Length: 521
Image (cartoon, rainbow, N blue to C red; front, top):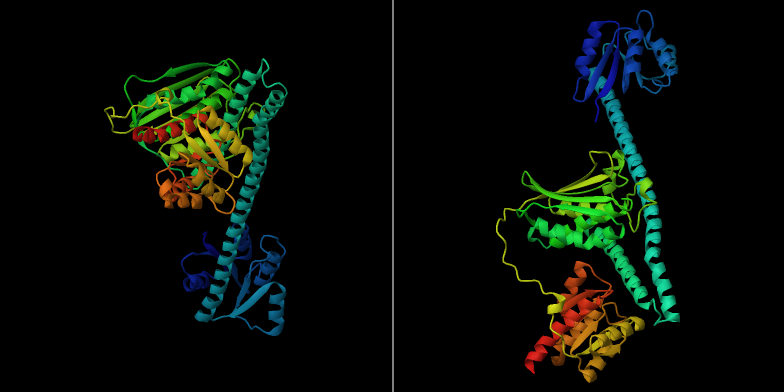
């Protein structure tokens, strides 16, 4: 907080020194003037909390100075205490108050009275300073809220647009297949619908990821990983978008292995987001470059393009949630303004930084991710990844599908039949427990959000029954937060799948569920 200033006006230097000695305190600046003209000059240069003015001065006397102060917008509200050695009769006091005085002090000055009065005006000014500071903070917060509200409105408009983009071809594809399910274009229509569904799920996953990171609920599964491996994984994920736009892609990864202590999936997501951005904002037939190098204990991963670029003033703002560069809105193909915000948050969770800059030739953008290198120098012994083709063919299982959404349950049943399994459907918890006694399922697909008796209660009820203590129970639910998975595990679920359940994921889990039964037969 800035110091408080008092103005002392007296034509005698010794009186000014005496006042200064009496009033001196921490946080107080004492401005001294020996004439009315000098006082006016100081008042124009400084904000003053109190003016102590001698009445009898040569030239401009104290009353005249006060009248001039009251006539000026800058100084009209400055409290004035007159200090006088003359008589303070009623007429004299009336003139002083008329000129704007708040008090009179008679010379010789009583020290305690002067200090007491001065302390009041010191504290009043301090309070005004605090109120002004709070007002400025409130104005800043109000501006920030307006900005956030504007971004929210833009985001909702963008979200509606981006959700309609995949929903429209899904709707059209369904209409065509309903009229001609075995037509010549049926296969390509189904492929298109699958791509649009994947895109729709990705949009929702991005939203959930931003929410999890913002709330500190995201879980990093760190391991010793090689930078080159994670970059190649990201490139494979982004390759369809890059090839669709006919971009050329160059990759520069050093032959030596650079190790990170990081979450492979999340770092791959970071790089893929940057590659997707480059593909979206680069005109067809452009160039995208990916490079990796070690610099001073850090791995630096750069993704550059020769696209439309980002204005210098916006390069820090693009990492804010829901930020969109105005010139880019027309070119955004499937963007919600959250991808770069998610990139920054995920990189920050790994102790790294990310920055955006322009290319040296002034065309396009360069995004640089800096991540701390691990001290790991040798390849870890890792269990080989199981490919889908290596999953053993599952024997036919009896699967109980429990879901209150009849259409979803029926579609899951068709998926199960496609995998070679048998199924039965129950729409709520009590019906599921009753059906299980008769059907004796080998595995149970159980929704969490059931009416009345929720999925957790149903699972616990199954586990209390000796018949189903070891039966594989798989949660298939729209609740996909880490807490939801923990609750499912505590209730007795073996696995947790988030809707929409992928065919391959369900097939793999059921193949694993069949193994113990096959070995026991």
